[in-house]
Image 1 (cartoon, rainbow, N blue to C red):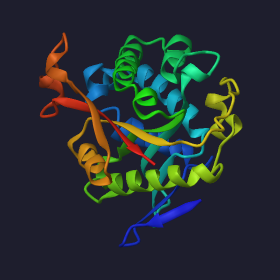
Image 2: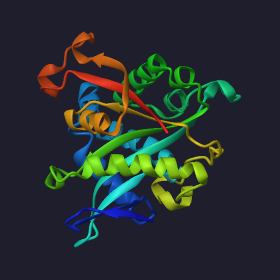
Image 3: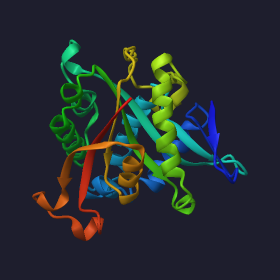
Image 4: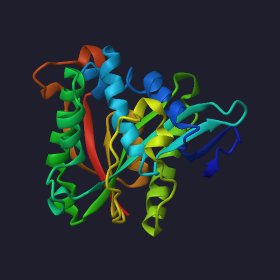
Length: 253
């Protein structure tokens, strides 16, 4: 499902499909894990197996049908992506565990993956979105990446804005859900899960890059919690450069 094109007509934003899903994962390998501050902090960028474990979380998110890609119209190459994951309030479910907690328990084997996911779960707990906003379903905008050669073209901003629009539209019903079979043989081991049926009432995100923070600000996201990398036990400023914080943010829809 196509949503829009850039003004110059060079890129098209569309829902992830079984055709574009492999390309979206490749974008993350090339344009997200090697550059994103939290990934660098926990050395996911140094461990290909850890990166592949993170892609399993993306595969799970793709099933919700709200994730997007930017496709170059001249080559049909996937050059940017954003994964969006629905989450119901775990306190209203029998598990009483968030998807992050379940993912850590069931899927995280690499130390880098586990450390990163525990950090994100801690940030999520401090933001406490469900209680803070009084909602029972939200959608997290996560894993926003662009291939290096296609940066500085406004794709991240357009993907984020379109993601918010698509999430709002999903309140009327499913958009473009995928099946496990659509994900290909590499993810055939995944177990079918109960689909989220409640409409999302909130968009959330973890912004770490200067550009993504700016996107969130432009779209009206409210910063709920700020984590300083300088306050962590193991300093990492020599690896992540000028980025010193990541933000937990939310936008009511």
